[in-house]
Length: 215
Image (cartoon, rainbow, N blue to C red; front, side, top):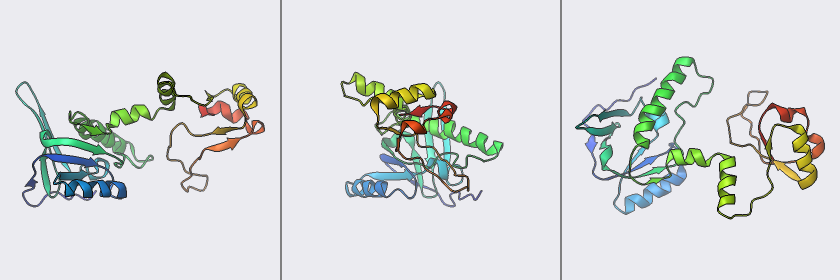
């Protein structure tokens, strides 16, 4: 790991809009441009990539004290100064699924340490990572939409081949889609993606039994 600790005294900043996203996020670049035009003090971080190599964290808790600071190579921020957080597409704390056990341990400590401190900020979030995580669950999306009065398409989540075939017979044509986009490599080791795909009843076989499927 290459460390890039500050070599000079970091610059203090006033009220801050914190932007948490990856370096390659062009949409966040546009937002930051507009924030700068409005005179906002913007601090951009990518927690999963910057910490701990280029980002320092200290958080104090006690009866008479609760404060936290983060420092980059150029900025030093008291998190109490953060007025809003734009949470978009930060790099995962562990972006190598096959990493050794000690790397997975370190990533978990970073997620629950730095991630926990950032998530505990009481300022407005767009959007809070815990709310994003809850909203990513398709069953919750469907239940919430139904409760709100929306018309939702006939949907089945199952690992029973018989139920999948009966659903296809009743509602066909149907599509299959992943319940969540997840990193996946093909047999050749190259990245593979499963898209929303039309499925005919004759393609539904015992493989349905091997996991949860969304139709």
